[in-house]
Length: 211
Image (tube, rainbow, N blue to C red; front, side, top):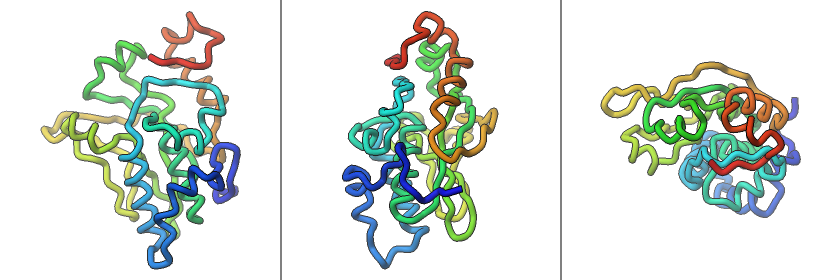
């Protein structure tokens, strides 16, 4: 599989993505250092927002996401993958089902559940091994929820904030759907429609949702 080339979704040759990675084009930086810096930038620059759903493929191009100030887990993962590939670091999308346990009242109200699926994260190939990264929750949101920001050290997976500062369970991974060569639009739509029937039954042909 090719995890370095641009695609329709990972359009890293675009001006928007090149602008993001430009500050990291420094020969003195290692791939690990670049990956850590890009992870932190994507984690904190885009505010996490799970309440906007779309099944229009144009909305999932990295260059389009880069123009926005917020995004959900898949949006942020796509941007990070595009940036990593732009810096010659192999990267691919990885999907799962997760369950949130803190600050879930609005999630349950809008989705009918505190289970989020598909949840997007990133696989990145750094120093000879694949690592899983989840740049989803920006630091300011974590501070509000009293959860430590999820840091990435360039050597270990960074996917799970299991507990808050007071020991309350925060996130739980329920199911792993594996990695995909490109953004799997059909799988994502089928998965969401299956898990959130209360949203989609009354809007069967709708492809944009602001919850």
